[in-house]
Length: 431
Image 1: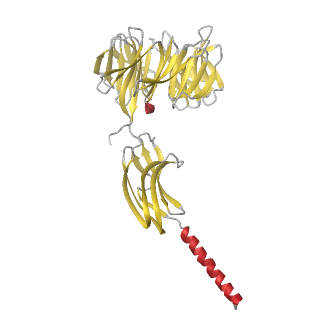
Image 2: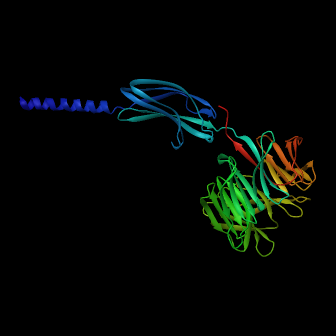
Image 3: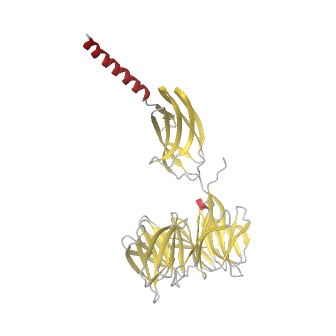
């Protein structure tokens, strides 16, 4: 009888402890009822999120986040403590304040916690990033004093002086998310990082011996590439951490650099003589792939198709040719009856080409070219895509023209030589 009692008691105790264990280890059930799958969100936006959490033993905490496709880089949308409730219904409106979230696929992730466990529900959404706004035009200007002056124009074209440098201008670029302006100069040969918010220099980089001269500066995907008279091309991130370093053929000097797909490309001249080559390297490793002899220097490389570049040359009679880096093939060579000094890209199929007194509209397909502006003493031209504005600098003026009307919108007196025009953008919508 005692043995039978023990047999009956043991399963009972086992069931009791199992029920206690189940009770302490229950999983919260999370259900997002809105938004639906594939919902589109535009930043800045207020997101309505609805749903409920249930747990027969009570929920202690709820957190709702926006995460990327790898469930990383969370943006907190909502969180609250729940006093051990068995059911909690949520209906919240959350503003996404992070303006730098790029366009792409994301998930709204709702996570509930009890004393022992955690569980989540996911809704896939598509996020459209905050629209860019043009904040300032940054003008690098050679003054009569010989100093290189950095000035800005605001939305109303008011001028502000930022910084002066000694040296001959080589190149410049702007990293808008960090509000950093990079400028490379020679004699003395330094590249500076300038904080456009404070007007203070963050860091500087000196050209290397024995030929301490920079030849070009390029900013691509947060990496600054510098080429030098030594034959070097090297790169660093926006905080000056080394990222890329190669030494080209010591008999050549890279003069114009460009990043295209997985390649780093340079137009390099022979150190002895005047011939030029296009040199192609793997972007990640710097390993040399091949070279192509060309007739003249390259003024600019532009991505034309997925695998092809449009190259502008700067001989006595300027011209274009197409180059495919993967196969090292040049095709469709064309010439103009004038020399090109400056190039500005408008879109995939239109370019502005400037001489010292005329601007032409050029369409690569069909090699079509039309004179659109007559202006003496042209010193620089660029195109601002958001406002569809042409910025044209002459000997003594900066003109802002509309596109495609080519009519003057703003005419500013500017009695110094413009070397480069850059644009600072922001994502600071008014909530």
